Length: 617
Image (cartoon, rainbow, N blue to C red; front, side, top):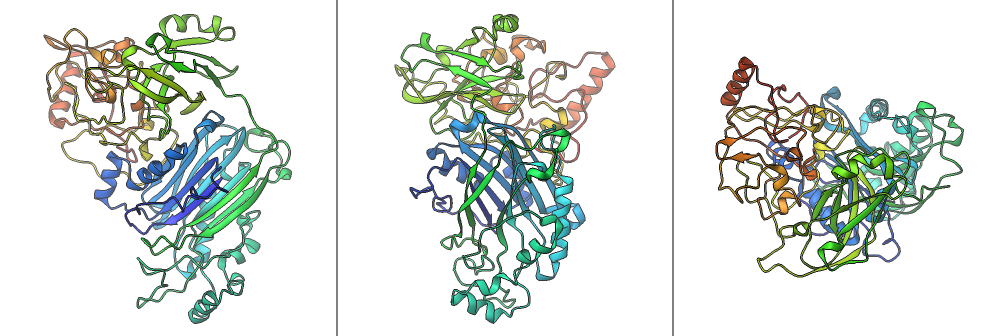
């Protein structure tokens, strides 16, 4: 496990972070999991709005750098300028389950998210692990405030389920970030002399965090490697020279990485959970700063750990079987079998990914993980022969390449099964690029029912939309004249559209009309054989049924109401309409007694209230 922390000081990302992630050395190229904690990412209102619509530049950079090394974004969470990203090798994804995120604001007495902590917790091969990225109060005299804020974060962050409800209930906790602990007593001239003379041990005993580890009960059990690198704060930006401004801040080890193993004698965890069987051991292989990065007044810090689990889950929740090569469309058959106790959903799907994909929604095409026959026969055949689905010829990429299949569980919000890479060798289409080729596609067109704003390049998850992310960050300002689509947690616990809860406005909806494509084929299903963003039939993610007489309502239980799984709460989208006109239609609908039917996930929430405070775009 590699852990990185960096206070980026609102700077733009550098062009290359390969050395920071230790990807260019033979010894550490076998990392399985990488956790990256950032602080002070630019969060001014114009930047936050852009990042809410599209993925922020820092997340894009790390995905771009890590995907060629077969790392996939597992989860991400953001609270203003504090971001946490967790990546893992693609073949580990089925064994990373129960993924949840949380965040706690401590700035301005808990009302502002410039300070606080964000966390990602998950089960790794059956063992509960939590990554906690914090930005604590600054200045030498605020040590007690730092202790109180850390205790508040530990108390406030609670997770669903019985596996580990609190941070310290996890088998292993990594705590890192800009913790802002300073060097006490010593004069700045002596501190700089010790650094230049490489006698850093003279400074360790005056480091506030080292003192606190032996005196604060809240830090009991936390471990840290030796500080054999120079203090990482504060530098003149663009140089390796310590602060030369009028303030002349004393150098300090503000950026730290610690870990804690749950004590075997801790007894039962939350919900009566037993501690992990056997002994869990952690060895720190590397703990260093990276002086080559000068975009911020902080230097990034990285640590590499070897984690030894006493046991591990070795069977994925879903096993997928596929031929070694697909050279003909009829070979695109996928068989899969679910483990006993796996909680499936009718919104589960199987994605076809290129080798080197960036995150679970970065697929080339997909197929729903059930059919009408399969649904009726599920109980009968699940434990015997499993189930199978077929990719349509239109959904398959043309040409040659290496691909991977992954089963995405909507209930778990994670990939529950994955194949080894296999070959697809299909003749190239004479009509041009494949309709399911995602490499060159972008959402440059809109359908005839909805205007959707999408990143031209990224399909990466929006930090504000991850499931179970209970953000306490302030909500974005409301824009007059716009109806904003609420986040998934404002519509319920599920990220998928619920047929029972979908309601929309009857009658005409103000739309931006584009020429119709393929008359006779209509609705979500007609545009959904592959991902809509990659289809030659239109690049909008959602479709509304159109007929000559205008739009007609579609039954929520109809296959036409199906949504692209890429949009089940992860990609940001805005529906633009006149708010006065929409409200008037709502009133007219209520007066006539019409049932409100929602035709697509981007249709206005006809009978729902406006997004509550704290919702994200």
